[in-house]
Image 1: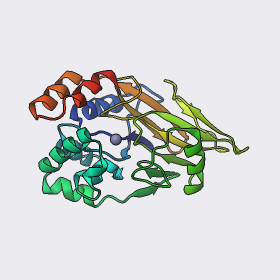
Image 2: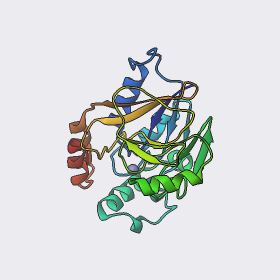
Image 3: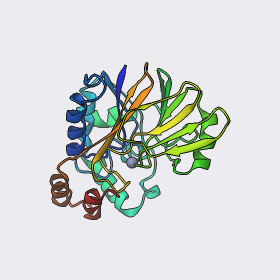
Length: 249
Ligand code: ZN
């Protein structure tokens, strides 16, 4: 099965549309697009199009889990736990949410096991809030899932953590080429963020996973950042949330 893995879309419709268009014709392997979508959380929050992003993903066969922003927007966690700009934007997202969107977010299970992968927004240990940035957190996380692969988002940083049979843990910045995973190793993999990349590259990030061949491919695609910035201004959302999109932080 060829899976399109997305995370941290953050109500950025232009970025999500660009990813879906790119993924449908991706000139990789046999160029056959994808069979379904796995969304690793934070479809909403920060950006200007929460309902449209949910509706777009819902239109595909997909599996989704919630992130901290999704839960903040529907009131499952306190918006006081977010920084002031995120809080303001998430309050606005909450006010825009249709009852259908709210119901969609409310029914998402915290973690899922699909094929040979565990899906968790932050980490398998604390799915909603823990950030896996450094090796010690990655290494500790391998004890909290049983599948060969765990897919996470939350940091908005594309990365591959590999656990070698020796117990050594390594972090790899994903290359542009497809990567063959080894059946002798275990992995925690972050596809990066669709709607708010933070690795200095403003292009939307996503990933393909072939669950049978065990290959992954991280990809980037440019989208119309100015259009999103215009919407952010027009809706009175914090301007810094627009500025950061053009710099990828
Ligand atoms: Zn996020």
